[in-house]
Image: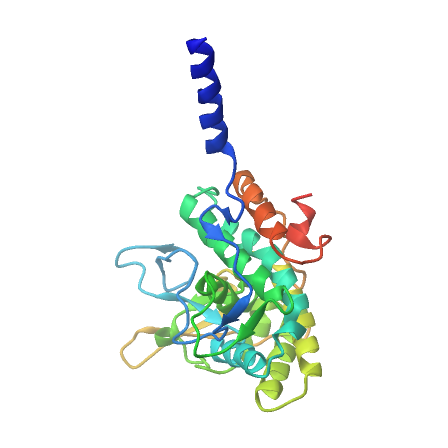
Length: 314
């Protein structure tokens, strides 16, 4: 009888350990209905991508040491300030619900983005937790009427994880020599030369998004939100990685100190030999251990089922 009791108690203890907490998943919890500060504040969020080595002067290899003198950087095509100011303008005007179609698409792509950051360890616990946090925040924001904005309140839990990926959407980022090694760096303006790197089709979409965001920031109507959401959804779905460094897309010169300086090669009229116009395949799989948490997060919020995680969860 004692052995039976011990066994029975042991089963109960094990069962308790295995049952997931109703309102938590891999370190994140359901965001409650309420009032929060929904604005993106402060400086640009840090990049979610892994650090890069320098490049050689021909931009054909990366590494460390005296042969690798060119510092590389991730460059925004649509400036971060435009992305931030557009989003904050929507929040201030209480129009975030009109951005819902993009947010639903965006959360489905975040696990794909994060998966590509370090393919050597797709189930890294910290990456999984950060991904779940970002998805959790986007789900709550996409759930119409769940959250109200007031800048005097605290931000929603996991908001920084959302802001990080929104600032660094892969389809809006390319790798190239940093600003100190470029003669054509636009600073905090639209990267008009990026057509060579991203191709005409993607460039046209990014250019239209930038123009519509700027118009909305300057007082344009709510219809612009729909246009931005449509374009940004296309960009978000098109790539899971940033545009890589391609030496043929850069022209090298030197400055007065004989240091290498670069500019983007102007796009030829026929596009021959330059950027592939087709979007990169989004074929990577989400860490299997992560899917159970993502299913639970999805169950907390009122979102359409047919477009979540590219149907990989159903």
